[in-house]
Image 1: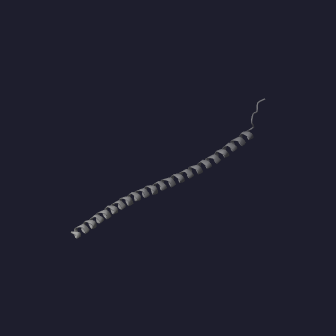
Image 2: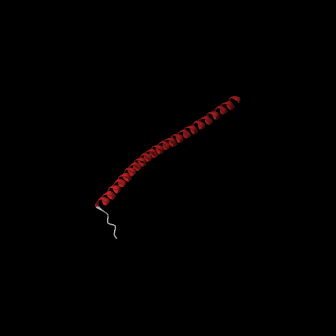
Image 3: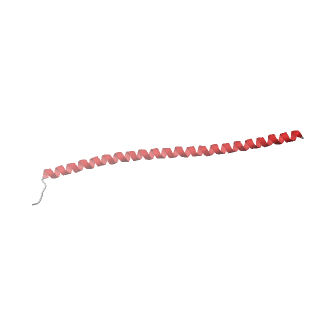
Amino acid sequence: MTNKLTYEQLQEQYELTAFKSSSFREALDKANGEIADCKAFLLRERQIRQNLEQENERLKKELQEERLSNLQTEDEVTEEKGNNKK
């Protein structure tokens, strides 16, 4: 005995397969949208981090220059005190 499907059964299977395919397509489109959102978020966060790192380096350099200036000023004051004692 062979199980031959009727036209109606084949049509029902086709419609079910088409429905599943459509559902999977919608889920895939939604997932792709979420991936795109995550990627955009990641790129924004990377840019923020890069900007913060650059700002941090700039501030470190500025602090180093200020400390050097303070040391030079202290040396000048110490030198002036030494000259005044003579």
